[in-house]
Image 1 (cartoon, helix red, strand yellow):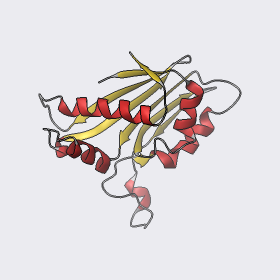
Image 2 (cartoon, rainbow, N blue to C red):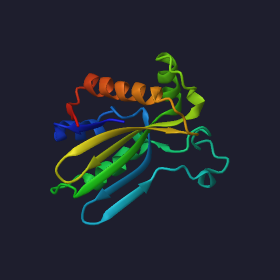
Image 3 (spheres, helix red, strand yellow):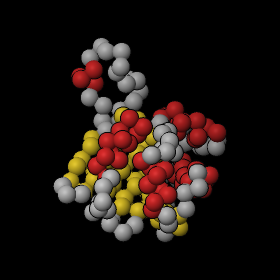
Image 4 (cartoon, rainbow, N blue to C red):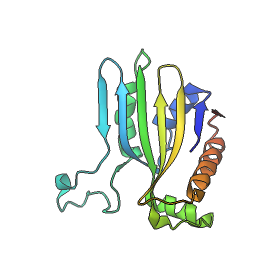
Length: 165
């Protein structure tokens, strides 16, 4: 697990809420505190879709970030800066499996529940924290190290400036 402080908020917010930078992610949860606090639960409600063709893929527990970022943008935009926000994003399962396989991870991708990004803004700065969720306890931290490295490379490749905490 690593913590990265964003050094250019305007640039980062454009990447987060406007550009397609975070499209490979699913939204678990969003909390935005402005004049009141809004919480978005990204869990898919399968009952809502029934047998509909527009139902999300059965392998997805959460909605894609690209489908919900506009809503989050609408909650944040305005003349005043939010008091707080937090986004919990998961790398799409097929991308997570591909990353771990590409890096020859000693941990089976089926044992990794999610590769997670926590984005937290406290009113003055944003911090991105990585995390790895497993289906069971594992001694190996190899998947964590691979994910930490991949996030650093991804952010740098997208031109998102940060300092490691």
